[in-house]
Length: 251
Image 1 (tube, helix red, strand yellow):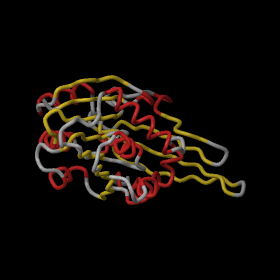
Image 2 (image 1 turned 30 degrees about the vertical axis):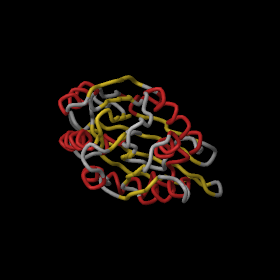
Image 3 (image 1 turned 45 degrees about the vertical axis):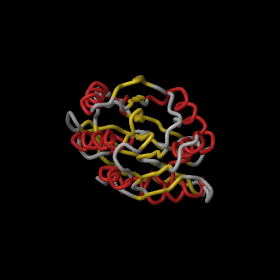
């Protein structure tokens, strides 16, 4: 079993853009449209700092910059994905890539009550080691956000286990690559994710595989925990690709 960081560095980082469709600009436009629908836009006040936790290849960071937020601190544990983000962002954007652990980064990069928005999208939240880490992160988010600031989370609610062959999830395929995911439920808080990547070179197929743990976070638990922290829930619904969307604001 690999850590989440090792899993991405050894297997998923090189495939990440491909597995999500291959067009970063189009993905960024889609994320910007989602944020607009949620009302996540820069206000008239001085708070425009945005933080993208688990930024990956940068679709959400690019969306934030395009909407007028800045600076945008883009945080990820994968150096490969951050390098790709830097290429897409270029030199003349407010995006600042940062290689760091999500659990400790907010107090380092934000003064209390100064951030306009914190994103944690693309199932990043389930990569944390324990529910206690999720709780601690939400406390840090509440401290970092300015009054009226936004928190947007997208994640997979794996609290209800799939059965039988439903646990095999096709991710993407083309004539030379096939990525499939298999879920193995360990206990009430953890599911093992097994990624199986088949690649074809010169007519010969090869298998590359890796496994890592994910948290099973229920929508009810996360919503209640946000409210306990002091955040108000503005929107909670399942969106595209089966990801649950949670939008909360600091009063």
